[in-house]
Amino acid sequence: MKKRILVACGTGIATSTMVANKIQSELANRGEAIDVVIEQCKVAEVSSMWRNFDLIVSTTQVPSEVQIPVISGLPFLTGVGSDKVIDEIIEKLKS
Image (cartoon, rainbow, N blue to C red; front, side, top):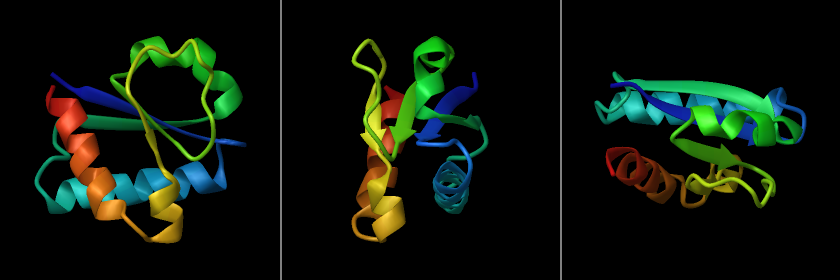
């Protein structure tokens, strides 16, 4: 069964693309990308989309009504701690 990750940023364009690409690349490097679908959106769209996903990775604050795991995507932008975030993503997808 495919797991779905929603990557959100302020505009749903540049930052979310960079984060989504890094997640996809790291999951592939670890052999974990086969059953994962990644989509992008702007944070304003999260409220209407989150129910179709297993996990959100966001570079900004997400609405409080979201009831799935949310992981900060900022380490992908800074380069500090991104390995730990990938570990966390894999753990959440397997639970």
